[in-house]
Length: 355
Image (cartoon, rainbow, N blue to C red; front, side):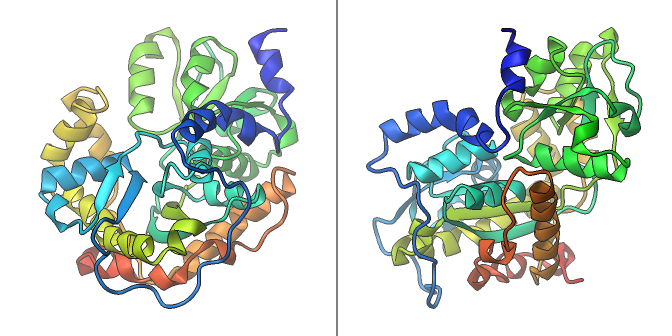
């Protein structure tokens, strides 16, 4: 059986557990306990004071780690970050939550939907909205795909527990195609590049800086980027219910949310330093490419109200349910609205989304 044939046999709803299994095992080995069932729903008034001495969180937000250090904002953390796991993929974060090895993380909107579907209790505590496309369909070297409509009958890399998965489904719908009109190859996004390079898939949605690095290497061999108008609206900060039910840890999360937002505005206002710190030194792209990537971005926006975010998240959950990837669910339960205004109130007015 070829690697491609192996991927094709993975069931839709079982894919997440398989994709995150290795990471889950590693995280569980250093975790005091593993909880696979949803815990009690967070309730009560949000702690308003500083976290008590000795409070610690494990935070998987690589960009904020770099931003706080570069901006001199580390001193404003009133708790200890025990570790900054360099993990970003939704399945990895969910498994980290289950193993209690990650207490707070940043992802797109789809991982909380997937977590809820498999009984992992977690809540969104901060929201950033992005009103422009952030993913491009990269094609395998030599592919004849030149438009989203040209994906019909092709093999697409698909990760149902990550942002890239919903980009695929929304792009197909916009082009008048269904998931049955293509062959979805179940892969975690960390394997998209290998699958493209080996032509196991014909196309895969890539974001920056991965897209630039891939096209720089394989553009000469006929690889290209096919743009879509699909917007992956949400970037969310989220935490397990167990963390939000602990008064000290909830206070630490509340302490971190404003710094997460301020770190992003710092990066926007200090683009040259951020290009050097993140894109060049951390991600390994050239300064020229880093500058081009930053120039293609938009100002970070933090909504005062989460109503629009919840509506978009519901549309996403419904689309996933229509495809049989998750059960139907009410996504309002994924948002801890006690935190609703904190990120927006931490930034200047130009960075607030009020509509």
